[in-house]
Length: 265
Image (tube, rainbow, N blue to C red; front, top):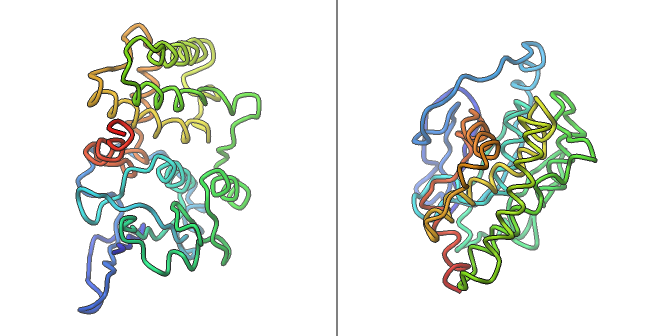
């Protein structure tokens, strides 16, 4: 099954044909994803030009708990955040990864998502996709300076190590806390975001991973970021409340279900 969403201002939905597996929906803000925050001001001329352009085609994982909702992949959310922050129109096709359709393998032999069609070429991998988007649509600029691009990059792997751990004394929690402490110190001196006062690509990559960390560790370990790491907690609050983040985030139950095999394995 696949579901197609289009980023416009309408909210109408129609089913295409009695045997079709597609549901075409147009929307401006995703339903059921909490309060929508005011959007940042957009250059009128640039926005009008992009709104009239052909929408990008984006294939993403469908929710495994609520049909027709975006799934729990943090790399897909990174791509969608980039598209949203650049104010680009897009068609979002949700794919049931437990029952991958033949057409997915035709456009990506590995059958993986996210995948985006840009200039008649399908691009896979969130690193490649976001780089291509930055090159083709340089305004507003989101690139993080090279000397800052790796800030916080070890948090995700240490989170996974701690999540999978079944031995409280194996040092995985301490490893995660060490990375979060380093990040907290960096934000204290250089924040509020990785590139200072402006959101950049590094934040759009790290934010979804921290969202998964918060939900998964809260559920499986009853663990949360210590209050002493106040700059990290404020960073997470700021990222998670962005209009684009609220619109593209996964349901908590999908995040929990998505990480269950690693916890139980």
